[in-house]
Length: 142
Image (cartoon, rainbow, N blue to C red; front, top):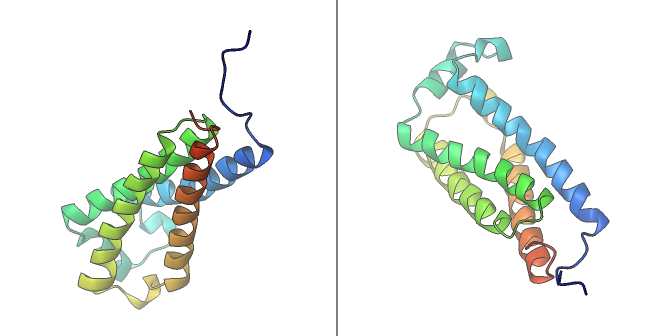
């Protein structure tokens, strides 16, 4: 007698989980290098370093929520956990907060202005939320 009522993981769960984890790991690397003060090693100049150093604590907190929430969301999708939805919601809250500082308050150096990247981050994160909700409703995430 099989008591497992959860649905079998479809092949695309692994594809989505791995691809989004790799994508989100880039954000994790960027965040970590910034917090460790290693921006010069990434090829950033004085203006870029000054910009990141001027970020208020609340903005860095939102950035951390966005980055680590997204990484956790990808990992939780791979682990087939329903908590992937919660992690991605945390990532969206973080993204909202960090984008508020970046686009509404801060004076971003021209070299760091990349609306296409911001759009791609939003598209990926919203896709992750939709996907996690869909997989949870289908019983794949338990």
